[in-house]
Image 1 (cartoon, one colour):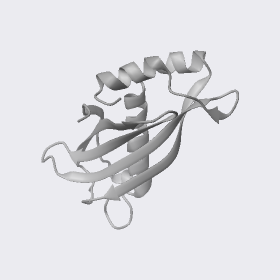
Image 2: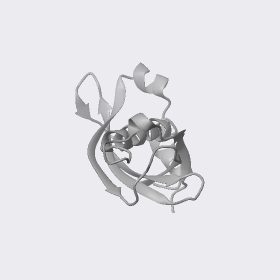
Image 3: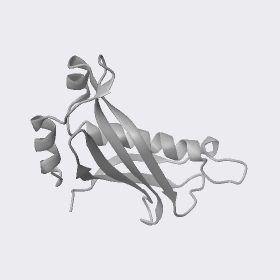
Image 4: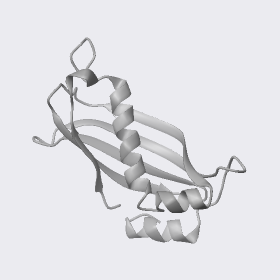
Length: 138
């Protein structure tokens, strides 16, 4: 099993909530996006990515909402790589209540290593594969 790491921690504020009183979908997406930056930086530092004109491009994202989140909740995200392909990698984010450990949502993402100049997916290199192995995948 891949190593799970904490990639996000915060509180849910009233402006995160919709007219039904729970956190709106757009904020789940923002939380999972912030968590992705933290996880992917474990594979290659952002500065190194920019130096090589590389990036990560998500090609699929599946979110499952398990239990609503209300204003005032303390939450965190645990993330783990789940699969390493030739040009793609997959990972899962799990959003939980920091006080109760109640599961709020999961998000499964497929992303590709992306050449920003050529605008196309490229093969995951040995450095990324070695870091992924350290996190338990590969």
